[in-house]
Length: 385
Image 1 (cartoon, rainbow, N blue to C red):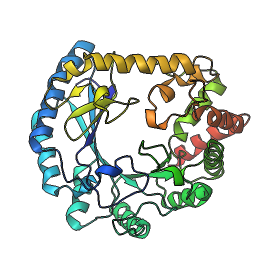
Image 2 (image 1 turned 45 degrees about the vertical axis):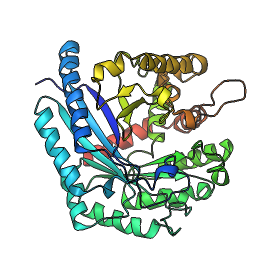
Image 3 (image 1 turned 120 degrees about the vertical axis):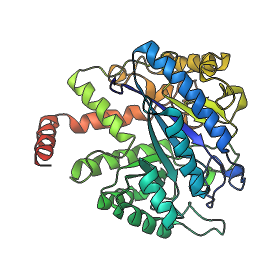
């Protein structure tokens, strides 16, 4: 059987319902909605993907790994039996020819024995949303969830489940990045920092916003903490990708060329009604939906006029913002092409302000002159592992 040489990630919004009311959540207006995807919808999605991948892999001489990310709301509020049944449906529909992986993004407020077994045996990895500081991840009564989730996280990792975490950077915790880093470093857990973005709801995120300067300062501090440490093998995402770009830039080697999503679409967001959205375009806006993955053949979604409009919009972002960047050859432009519209900042003249660019420059400055020592250190550490 051919080796796996490309991925297709499907982020499934199985339900918007949640037991938390995180004050910056872009799904905030829908968090009390109990509507959820049905087994029939999900199996229809599987069959459409199966039929498409069999043809696409044969056509391209490739083998695709299909990655499902179960998202919400809070996906673990769905019955455990739903997931056990849908994982069985996956095995029946995809068989051995198409490689499958499953992960879930959870607030981990609930960790009973049934869900612990599901996370251990049913999923390849678990993402936990946990800010560590700030007090914005609250339940319906307004109480902070930090203590409970941290205890559940420790219990979950002790059981051997593969876990990664996400922390949102807001005005409430932007000055506590040392505390955030030390929390995950002490547990040797990889994590991602996600700077606060505008949800689009007037006034919802205004009290928690941070300036661009404070955001860049916090990201630079996380770089310093990682370089000074010896526990986490890679820095928090997205800084891990920025380090790779900086290293390629210093070495004078090119990174991946800009990827035309017409040739291969690596990611699709699926709302609870089955409507699909490419990454980088307005999720939830029906005018930007490429079609319904539960009712339409996947190839038709990729041939739709909206899909073409999405591809053109991504190319225009790269052409208008990346070509003059000194890191473009080492980067390829995906950082701008695939940045969600709600996360974009502009300079007032139509040019996107790529947060990655100044951070990559800072990383390159820190690595300059110490790369040989760093590489030798990593090689020695891996030789001893």
